[in-house]
Image 1: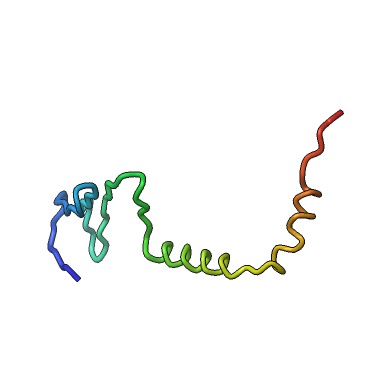
Image 2 (image 1 turned 180 degrees about the vertical axis):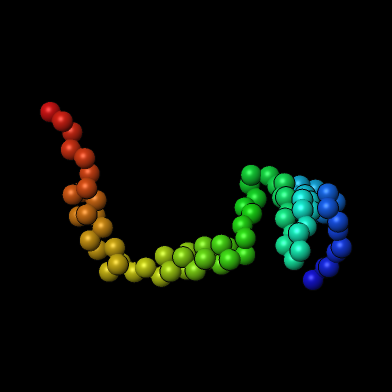
Length: 82
């Protein structure tokens, strides 16, 4: 792990496209500004972990888990007015 010291308004570059700027420091909290291309997803670690868990659970869904989905979709589909 690389450990860097930065003060308010100083920036760290990751590659050529990602800038992380120290916006504010209050007590034990640091506010960071992250400037990255829209193609790069930026999440807090706890959100990232939750996304990974949900994706893993969805990948484990078997055919039995989806058996009633088609019938449900047909029931929920709006009918054309005529």
